[in-house]
Length: 98
Length: 231
Ligand SMILES: NC(=O)c1ccc[n+]([C@@H]2O[C@H](COP(=O)([O-])OP(=O)(O)OC[C@H]3O[C@@H](n4cnc5c(N)ncnc54)[C@H](OP(=O)(O)O)[C@@H]3O)[C@@H](O)[C@H]2O)c1
Image 1 (cartoon, rainbow over the protein chains, first blue to last red):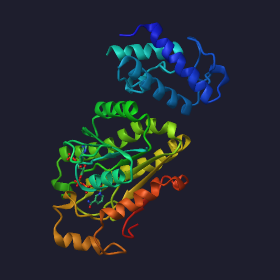
Image 2: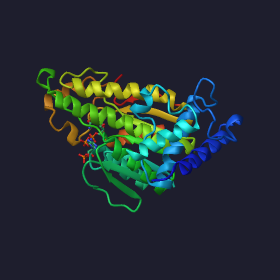
Image 3: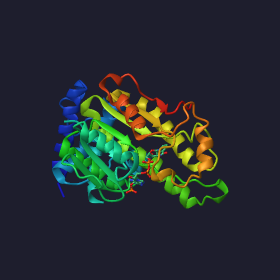
Image 4: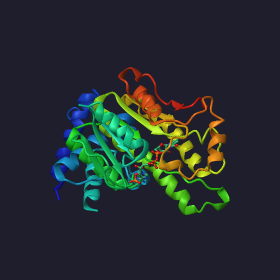
């Protein structure tokens, strides 16, 4: 099981790559507290879809774990796991564990 | 070398489509519940049920590692059940919806992720003339394909931003195991409702699939083409 900082590094790499592709200035130097998909966030839904697919692939490649981030739990959660970098890291840890 | 994913390749139309794209020099990744019936150096088989989410996700991960990306998807796997509605058990209804609707959806979702980098993805779903013709005895089968058509139109919009086109083909009856149980008089009556009154052939399907896949068809999405002049 990878530790939290390894997962955070992976998420930040994915966010920065996406930020370059989608030319999202605010996320090109993203850190753990960066807002992602929220009313004040910098991602639109298409960018979010791409980010999630990138992260799912990267998790499988690096850690050999096949997870689905957009599951029912994520859709019904009061606080969306896609809100910011750290909530996304939490969601990944939870899914790798189960 | 381009990669095409085709579901339901063990027999019938799917097997012929796989052979066609192998002959054209594509990598073909096929699947069916049963074992592979095609041996070819560019053919990879996955024994899975298209409605098994975990298995479909695992297949997508394998394809990502093996080929990096996917250029086209043919959601051909499908089952039918011809029976009067009053004689159709819920288990049959569930089985048909699982394969035809859930299976098609899962493959669209997972393969679209692998098409993102090509900027020219192609998804082709399979419907049937049983839906527009409102064929008696095929209520659940036709309803499942109506769902596939709706998925096709909406995904065409949702995936347009990823430069993926999503279209569907609705064949008329073609001689495969799928229609083996249909009585001859029913079949004749059905052919009479087509503008061109002959049995369909696999080559008719291949022609329409080739059309949707061509690079020049990048402005064609959300469309359903029925064969034989049905509409
Ligand atoms: N033939 C026609 O007259 C006709 C007309 C209109 C539309 N269509 C459509 O064309 C498509 C192909 O039909 P066909 O005539 O070639 O049928 P078929 O001869 O019965 O072949 C169906 C294929 O799908 C596979 N399959 C079925 N259920 C599956 C599942 N749950 N998971 C994975 N694979 C599955 C089968 O392999 P396994 O058994 O090994 O799983 C087989 O390879 C279908 O979508 C059908 O609705 C056919």
